[in-house]
Length: 562
Image 1 (cartoon, rainbow, N blue to C red):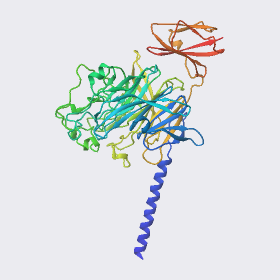
Image 2: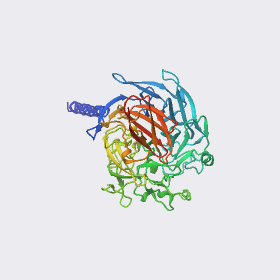
Image 3: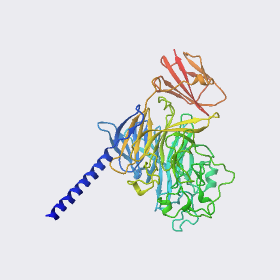
Image 4: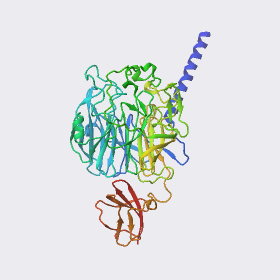
């Protein structure tokens, strides 16, 4: 009888634990991100497939698309409820490890790698040109690299971030590192003495109309052709231009507790990797380095457990006559924790103190900007980025339910959406950023796209369901464009009001092209060849905005058509 009671108690306890387990799963699968700004509205847009990798918006079909790492490309069909349809797979575009996508007019650009056997692979950019009303595309190769060494490890970041400049002249591509922090990665002696190679840890630029470009793993040839745009980036998974035409990238550091970065990506600049990460020097480059005494090395990290931190007497010297460009300083109030190398403790930056840029291990990605300045203050012209990794770990970066058994973000939160208010200096250079978390509770967010005032956030997900979330941001109450002529007396329009032809009083800046928008912000016409007089006689009566695209900026001028 006693044994029976004990058995019943055991069964009851197992049932109770099973109920708790199921409850946890249900809570995880049904959890919804929460807005920290009451002006934001977050709604579930659609459930997505496993291992989603990037998201984009097709301006032709006016549809959201997303990709998976395995090479699938899905289109979201809006309805009740929304659904998705597989449009393309690896048999169409040939990219077996797909990480990035970008739409431009009727072209879809995809970027990724084909890792042949885990020891080496090629990088690819493919273009799908729209063929008909059914959404079919003709696929062609933009660039293909020579074979280059992989590592059979978690540090093969590959081809990922891709964007296009506002003039639609160039593709900008991020190729991530093949190492954690510049250590030797020889793959059992197959690649003796190899660390990074010319095709890794850099930002490349290619003409948008490139076809079948073969890119060798040769720095001299890459430089001769002008393909290397910037060097020393570890893994800029997110690349984006802002409304001023400046290019930015968010970059994650290695397993050591160095800062994550927001960089102003400029031509011929070097961002420090592998000699610097965040604003910290990589100590492995210095003789006598002892990782066991390094308080920024997490002893539970993969890199430490695999013996990748060591006294490295062959670590290469920094390139001669090169000054590294530091990341943009974070002035807070959020995402600004750091580990003090003197005592190993984690602190939050105080008011007025800066950090370069984000809390360690947040893994920022999904960078976008309000390029049309259509959002309401304080978001007008701002940037937004996501944090991928789990947060709220203990001071050692431990979390009991950590995925992949990785160290997580210590103390600070993560898996959130950060508003980036970038501050420019008197020389019109972006030097600081105010970072504010405006939503959290995502399930490994991996990408975002801003369509009008709606931000769509894609989740990679690991447990339960994974979604695209639609975040409605406050829109300007007046118009979607802003007349900045009061603050800038160049490029004045006359006569204004106008009946037939309008002229632009120019400064020394060359005008590349202009766009004319109606009062709602809708594009009315684009003029690629700008003469002294612009014919507006066919415009209906009303208020219009002329966006003037120069070599240095975008200027907006208001005019009235009689």
